[in-house]
Amino acid sequence: MLSREDERATAPAGAQEAPPRVADLGFARLDLQREARTGHPEVVYAEGKTPEQTVAVLARLAAEHPARAVLATRCDDATRALVRERLGSREHLDVDDPSRTVLLGPLPEPAGLVVVVAAGTSDLPVATEAVRTARAHGVAVELVVDVGVAGLHRLLAEVPRIARADAVVAVAGMEGALPSVLGGLVGVPLVAVPTSVGYGWSLGGLTAFAAMLTSCAPGISVVNVDNGYGAGVAAARIARPVGLLRAAQQAAQQAAQQAAR
Image (cartoon, rainbow, N blue to C red; front, side, top):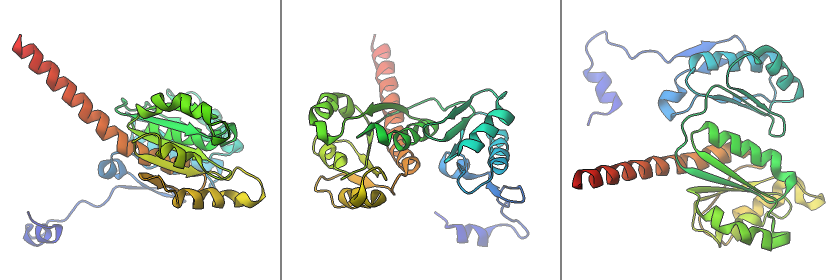
């Protein structure tokens, strides 16, 4: 197989690769080929952008990807209000206040299952960011809320449901014990999200972050503090191929059974 360098060396004289497709908005240069490379459009990180900038980026990305949802995260009150004002007439607009996210466009047909587990109700803003991100990246998602280790019986009651997942996201602040406990209860790939929830020496999520990184339970990956988006993407990239493979196997089995009749 030729390397990209070999391909360029053997290309006809004068032949050039097509330049990357970029939309230059003046304040941002949008990567219009992200979906072709990774399977998903560019996502808008709204924090630090003006509401007008976020709306302009969302509208341009939606125009480029009309068949699937584009996502914006960390949208403050003013941004969400302007999205509703400027884009409220658009079909498939979904603005969520608790997670501070915006989805614009139809969601992909889901394949695979992610279960997002939140230790406490205070972790819901991060957990719901993970939920909406995972859905935007093409998986079915279930949310399990308020099952932290202070009431372990609540978590144990949900273990059969959680164990059905193709990937799990565990969201916790305070001492961050939830992923370690879950990692010993289910054999599912697990993405841990430390949150900044907690008093004093929780240190804005650093205590939970360190606890998750040093967990004794195997099979745990850890994302940054409050990074529900990153966890949602990671879990979806694990679960969706599994779901697609399972669907293909089921279809093959059905075809074989029909052929045998």
